[in-house]
Length: 168
Image 1 (cartoon, rainbow, N blue to C red):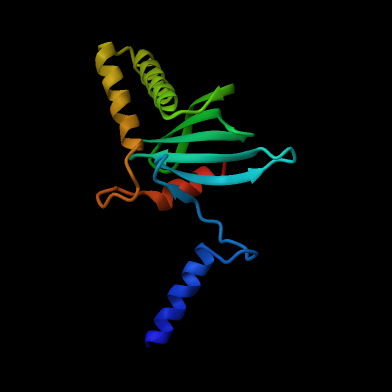
Image 2 (image 1 turned 180 degrees about the vertical axis):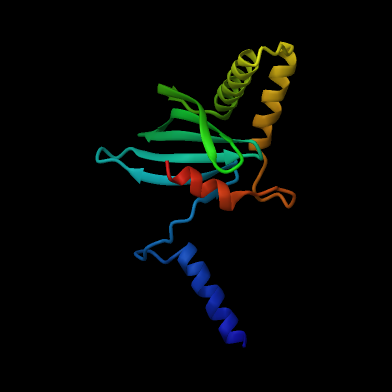
């Protein structure tokens, strides 16, 4: 029985982290330093590397499009998705050209995107909310997206979220 358990776990880990030269099973990789999943990583013909970073909470999903050019990391775009009960829908998108990526910038832009979205919905509904309340709600939502997936109390909807995002 111990040999069977050892073989199962060895095959599992070999598919996640195979030896050099073997194909790797496509699984989004969690980067705890950036608090996001790394997906769709590839290298262009000119040697630049690109990937999508996905972070989420129970209400919104943030997708970062990141480019690594020589020694610099740039943010190429940020997409914000919201849940409609069944799937995620794009609610805001911003593209950037030659903007260095850093966490403070991504947080600030994401909060502004959530705030703009909420303000637009409230205006369409002819509802007024104080600006500071709108800002605090946007900050709270974005802070929820920066929670570590490795925390024991992380409320995961991973099986619903990542397949929906990867189709885009």
